[in-house]
Image 1: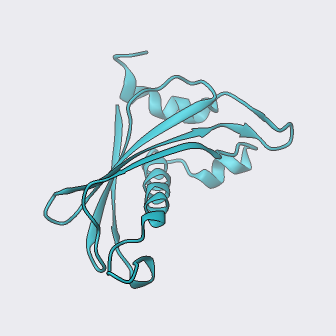
Image 2 (image 1 turned 45 degrees about the horizontal axis):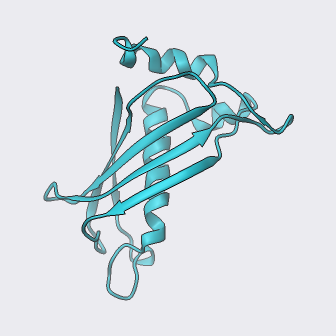
Image 3 (image 1 turned 180 degrees about the vertical axis):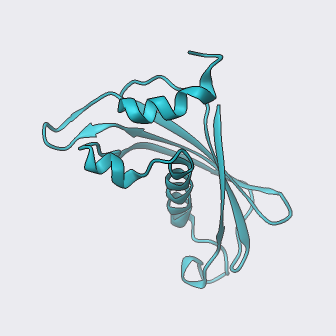
Length: 139
């Protein structure tokens, strides 16, 4: 299993009239978590795109437990629970407040996509090689 953690402070423009993080912005926090997780591997979304690989979201599920509030420092924990090397990758994201309370959980499924041929492709070998050491018990 691979896990990465990053932090985001809730900005005023991301909140609704009650000072709560607007529900639609949770997906943006998931994206920050994914990008930073891949960066921790020494790899970036930009490198994937330069290799001709896009990663569109195919499915997003979210469950809200407590609100994130304006100026809260949110811990975003992003986890890959399995590594298949296939056409999809699934990120599990949990958001916590500064007290460690669970605020939200989400699962985002992305596909590896070749924009030239307009079709799904398998995970690039370079990304697979960087993730594989975290999944030695399942490979």
